[in-house]
Length: 103
Image 1 (cartoon, one colour):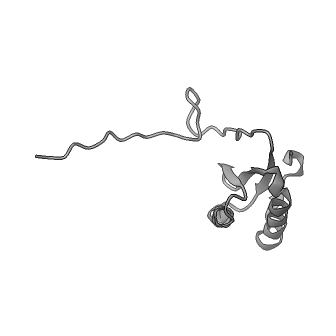
Image 2 (cartoon, rainbow, N blue to C red):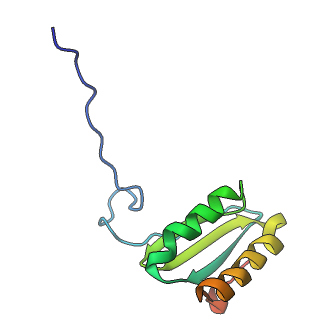
Image 3 (cartoon, rainbow, N blue to C red):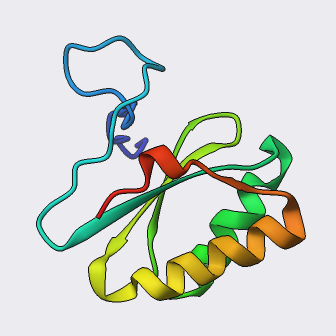
């Protein structure tokens, strides 16, 4: 007798209910969070995400398109995130979008 399979659920987590798939959605930030917008080469996105994940809770990465990224992190880790971005600018040619840097 075949084992019944659970239904497959496909969701576009970047698109809220009722919006078109693939549309960029701004990250939801609560009190005590800040944002840095960074631009890197699209081929470097996976590397940057790996560095962030290895830094245990440093920040969340939201990819908008290609190498346009938003980093959201707790205010208490602002110095660490800014140091990481400075390193990325030197090593990968990343660019900080100063107009979108908010606390």
